[in-house]
Image 1: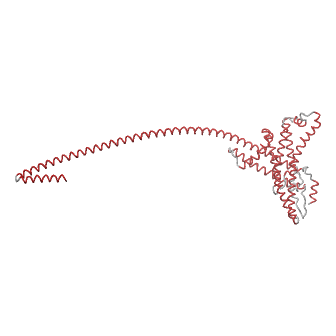
Image 2: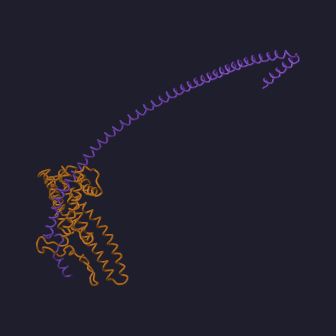
Image 3: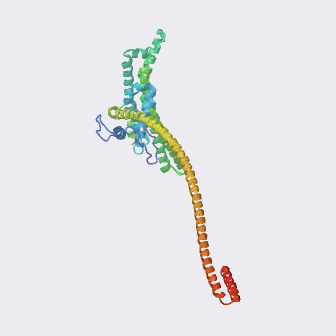
Length: 268
Length: 178
């Protein structure tokens, strides 16, 4: 947290929170600051965790053991959550398996980077800078268009932009709206929903805790009592941020799935 | 500090990505996508398939085992029934045999007793006969002795002879009393 109470003055957190100074490759396109580092650490941790789970899976195939241990079961539950509750439910088993790699990656990448927002010493979400939401939204965008074209050819665009059952005259009105909602608003809302949730969550937490710091150490007399209140709020918002982290990962993945499902659907 | 924040605020728009931001996001995404696509998910699916297969196999196996167990239980029950019948027939036989043995023993015992009684009787008769014979012999000797005493005394006096007869009779009576 860079916004801290100093010398008896209180500074509200600003957007500069999300642009910490670079400490590696400064000035190049490969500049690394705290948030980029957090992303890379999350990536490494995800790989290590899932590598361990993968080894368990392979071992159980090799030994023919059908009873998973606790650790393996946890991995199965995590992967099956995306596989069954999201992919199979929305897309059916066949298409669900086809798009599973993307959906799994999106879910665990978003979840992992969201949760760093409340992890001590990280304290900022890897998704709270626009890059990750943007890249993931772009991936979702490309994927659902690919899915549509693969299934329907160029008729995909016709189906999307000129929905059947609408009088021809209305196309002047409907087609721009459909274009806007399908091809522009979908990726934009995907990215912005995630980004803004994470930015707002982080600013809230910083506000609560820097206010607590200010009230405890810089305020006079009974004003210090406010610190207890802001601390309590900070605690509550921390719990809330855990919920938001999971929820946003779920929503992002689910919406991507729904967009793919709509693109695959026969008639609009 | 404040000026730096303000400066940053002027420059940065959170919706516009910096080049490094996009680059590192893409790197992380591509690495994770590749990892999940080619490493985690294939192994996960393979494990699930193997498990489904194994469980199906084991279910069939279990069914077979169950059937075998049922069969075995039935045969064990039948065998048990047979054994029970056999046991009861053996018991019946034994009972009958026991009764027979008892009757035989009783018969033998009673015949033995009769035989013993018979033997005892015979022995008694033989003893009595022997005693009678002995008595007869003794009586004969006594008669001879008496006759010789009477003959001897006749030579002296009738009174003496009478006295001899009386004494002899008394002596005999004493012997008999003994």
